[in-house]
Image (cartoon, rainbow, N blue to C red; front, side, top):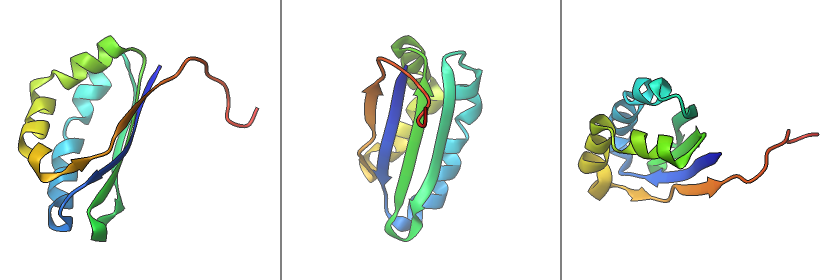
Length: 99
């Protein structure tokens, strides 16, 4: 299991446009059988901070998502306009948080 999580920092005036365009890729992610969850939301809109959470069953599925032209277009357009602090976590075991 792979978890992507962390923050993206943008100009606060760009946050709504970024979120709309990034969220437009949700159907592509959900159609990928290896996607278990994807979510981007404003963490602190006034500061231009977005929180990212994604859950993938394998690196191959994540790679397929990241190579999708629609997803690539997001990175092409926004890459130079943001500070990306999203990290990849590789999960070796799973269990309930409270049990």
